[in-house]
Image (cartoon, rainbow, N blue to C red; front, top):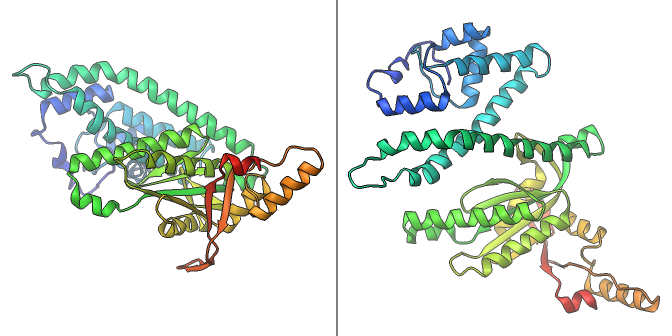
Length: 369
């Protein structure tokens, strides 16, 4: 919770609050409100300026000088400040930790309340109110969800740490060569005008769930979802290509889903707070906007990476030559997973002239030729 020294938020925690809301807050936080922001900062042994930075980074609202903070808030401040004092984190890095954690868990909490808790707290009997059901449900769920959250976080941390320590040098820990892809629902804006809100929400949820499952199962990493679009990354071009084509194939087999288009690029990517940035990401986004329906466009570097790793031939003529040479030597011919077709070069705003390639899956007959 951020701090407002002017006291403008002092009425935010007034006597008019719902008693159930206060009981739920105490249940979830495990402590009563005891401190004003100034008192919490003093108890934690940090300056008001640093406490304000931490609270705002976590995304909490101004509370003025009301007694709105608990012992848990003091402990959190003390821990972050202790990491800075011990030299384990710089102050800027500690603020980043607070911001990334706040942003991630805020979205998780909103989803759980909107989609999960709301459904569970439907009154089971006529005459009961939702408020009468909410408290015991939260009381039962809280410890289980907390344990599960910590488990998943540790699993994700282990996976991320494993990827980082395998990088060749320190520079690659931040600026890495990755395959980056955007998958975009075609005609989503028109759908928003034709569909009811509930229908639209179900469609978006189905799309995000399908994409997240496919990306994870095939070894990619879902970076973020944007309603009608998902952004994912993979360590190698072959993995990203397989995910893209499976997304297209899966969506094409679902009559309730719009068509999909995917744009991908391969190159150096800067990673920050779980997100990706840089020219490679911008290029993938631009390729998505010009990709045909139910098709995948990749940039020249992505195509060359597939050729280098033997996942795709440079051309069908090259594939035929390689097959003939293998047959002559009595060896198995190369088995390519993908096919690449060069498209017309075109100028792309902010990126100059790019050479898109159409990525497709090679048929069994092509792969065995």
